[in-house]
Image 1: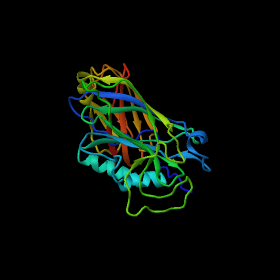
Image 2 (image 1 turned 90 degrees about the horizontal axis):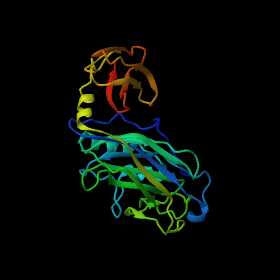
Image 3 (image 1 turned 30 degrees about the vertical axis):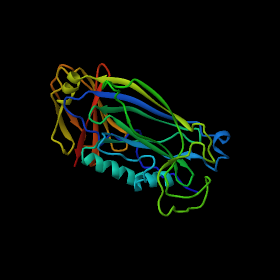
Image 4 (image 1 turned 60 degrees about the horizontal axis):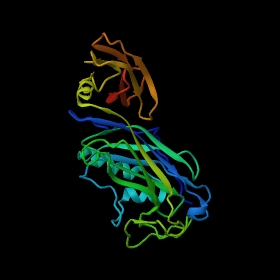
Length: 305
């Protein structure tokens, strides 16, 4: 049986998110809700489940997968085993080339009828495309995917509410015909194709993806928040956060690489800088999340040596 391999991330991995000067930032909640059931998709296998919902926000300089094209190694690993490592490497390469700006990841609630929600996803105008994938598990190489969907409409305005039916897809890398077929490598590798109406599935959807606009940070507010400074960075744990006067900040939250909040501080709006002691934290990468009174937020990276 194929097994879902989970990486140790909680919620969305925002560590690669890059904020850009002069760009509006939209915040979205994104939920995939499964309707995978035996009536529509054949007798279900033992332990039916979904691998992590993973993906990226990016621009049109990169395509992570496409129907009627061969799957990359990253998509193959997700579709066959629910392993995300190589796909994350592909996203990180795109980030280094300024084609993408963040890796997204969220686990599912258990079972065939599970759901996964990516909350408070920050999307910039320079990276408005959304790609998401998750393995239908166990299966030979079947997955659901969203490829390069733009969150900006034709007028360059942020879309407010989207609901779309999702259908099973074959990665073209394994020739198994049922959920628990033994490994049978497709040679030569085939193209990614839709499985809508193909056994064991019928023409019905396997789930629904909903994308809801939560807020938009306008350029003026964004530029004010983006001026916040952190020094020294890298640091041994004692840092000064500057240029916060007139920002209407309410709190600063500090998260470790696993998404756990390790520190939280209320802000006095009469001060222009604050000192933060994180010497008790182990060496590594951290996120500082700055939240305004109105609920807007921005995040910045901090490296503790």
